[in-house]
Image 1 (cartoon, one colour):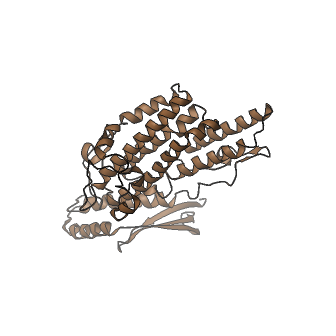
Image 2 (cartoon, rainbow, N blue to C red):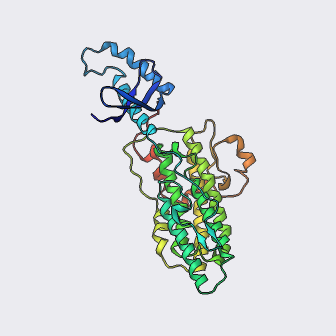
Image 3 (cartoon, rainbow, N blue to C red):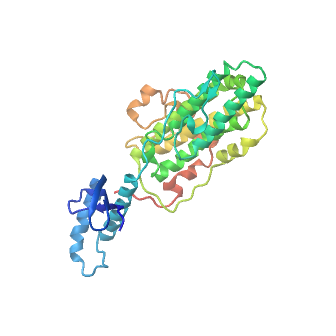
Length: 359
């Protein structure tokens, strides 16, 4: 028999976790040892396993699952699957780049330049964006235009969009398994994306330097909000982390509207007006999510009539005064909710399946 690689798993009697190891074998002899891995049990999981060991004494048949045994069996099965997933994961697949466009007539396009993450498929966005910049530079130069000022301008836009989108993923992977937080995060990320990067791409505005300059104040504020909300999502996850099942959440009306508007006809003035409208909706979104998540804070009640600064939202009450959360700017949660009607149906503990605490 030819040698094959095999993955072995073991979760012994010490209740510490699941060990993973790779060997090369022909079925009789081990010819080589490969990498190893480990998935630790949490304190809550260990407590459940100890309870199951006590309950197992009452077993009379192999098929019986008295007490906590069935729950423990499901836990151990899931932990083995987790261990394999973590062991086989692909690491360090994201990368950046110092330069993508040059006035010396060379450019990097798509993943030859920089790559973010598979989630949301941003690689397709940056392939399209870089191809748009490159073909515009080539076409202009063939027509005899001086593109020396456009090259750094396009590169600056490219990298700013890349770095802003990077915030969707950096330090966020632990959120992807949180149904409540990730559900709202998906709504938020697409609200930002369809309001600015995608919309302006559809209308070829990223190569319109005059428009980009006019719209910069609104876009700067949108980016500031986007980065602030990524922090809020991480904080929300740390406060909550309940599991949810049997839930269905649809897009709320504003998100459907901005999706439908992607290929609508807008002149520059209408796009600028829309940029302001969408930024105000993002502010309302941020305030509404903050108020919802803040309900998890002990001994804290947010006044629904008091203005909240959307650029200072966070779930650390010790920072609220310093950050200016209640400095009088912004709008009240009650006012904000009117601008993002329907968003509340993303609250899984109110409108979704029954939440359960994580062990």
